[in-house]
Length: 336
Image (cartoon, rainbow, N blue to C red):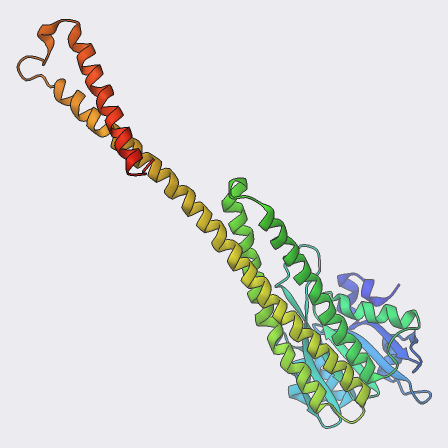
């Protein structure tokens, strides 16, 4: 069992979630915490990768004491500062990257951060909440098809972070397509709530992922010399892919806005049509109501009362004739 699967009590006693030593050929073997602390490469091409729980007490002191990492950098690596950034510190690369939270019950905009530090011989990644990207790269290494050096390990991690972003965008676009097929009669309020949620997700992802674009540019242009040219090309591809995803987010947001406006316009049109029908009906019955009300006032004698039973039919005929005249007039005016 790897340390990634240990329970919370075990993790409080052990900062290492898992460790691997890359063999330079795409494979790796597991390494424990005690061996990782004093690790030295046994042959050329070996790279140590340890994935740590950044909330473990004493980890910041270990980073400064064992790896001679400066205090501000160690504080950054173990803090909850999640805004993506990357910078070079001597011959080391320091970065904070974000990935979409695919843990159960999480929303797409609930981003997870991963801190990274590497000097070319060691790669340290740190996280607080479970993140799938390191496990995917670890699986590639265990299968013998993973990165071969520190640079390719960094690029593999960034590629998986960005690739998984596309899943959230595809899911949102699928929901938009489904909503476009629904009619206003289905449930306008529920549909508008779903669209509002999609718009909020798009805005949140755009706000969180745009700084990552700048962080990747910093890696591509400012990484140390051990970050080879082919690694920079891979990062450039990741940057281009991220830019496309950001454009897709804009398109998804615009599609949601168009759909939202269309639903509201159809609802407003239905409301206006109903109000128009009510206005026409009121216009037809208003004169009739006036006549019956006028004849029914109890001031003196009731009109036409002396005609006996014929007075009722005379009033009915008068109202029917007035109704016909009103309908013909409304049709002539093309109101009905």
